[in-house]
Each structure stands twice: as C-alpha cells, then as structure tokens.
Image (cartoon, rainbow, N blue to C red; front, side, top):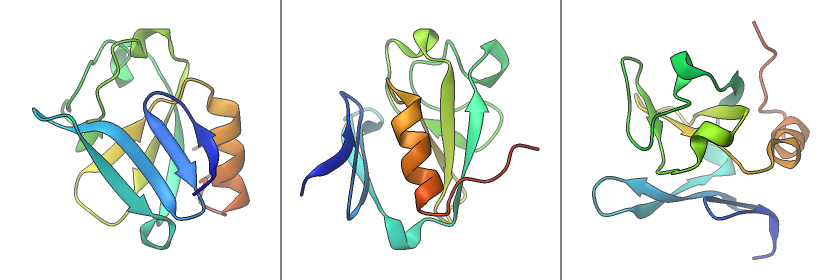
Length: 111
C-alpha cells in the first residue's frame, strides 16, 4: 500500500496507521485501522508532555512508541481508537500528519 506519510517511526496509508517500535520490550509494530479511529488530538511536546520520554507512559494512559529523538520534536498526536491506552505518535514532520488527520475528520480542535 502506498504511504500517504512515512518516516522511521510511522506509516500512514489508505488502511490506517502503523506505529513501529510500539510494544515494549520487543519493539513490535501496532496497526490501527482508520475505521477504529475515533479522534486525534494535537499535543505540543514539552517536558510535561513527554519530550524526554523514550518509550512507554507516565501518569496518563498515553503510550509513547520508542523514539530516541523525541526531544527534538515539537508536536505529537494522541490517538483515540477506543482503548484505555491511547497511542501518542511523534512524527518527524508533523505538518503532513496533521493534514491527513484533519482530512479524515479525526483531528479535534485544541482546547
């Protein structure tokens, strides 16, 4: 399937979102079909929102895929696919991912 967006950590195509190095400790992939996605929320990455988190979760049920360079990222997206744990993706280029999520009607307005 031709990717609409792809980097080292993510692939967004016509079927859904593939998150590489998602599951700990085996670093296996997670696939979320578009039809399972309820919404996505843009998050500015800061020390309080996971800027220095390499992998896993903090106090919120937000699960971060492995990203050794997350500290360089400015934006993240919290994905709601109906599960308790919400995947958080940090694309290398957030603009195209934001546009794809918006075009699919998934991106929530910022509070």
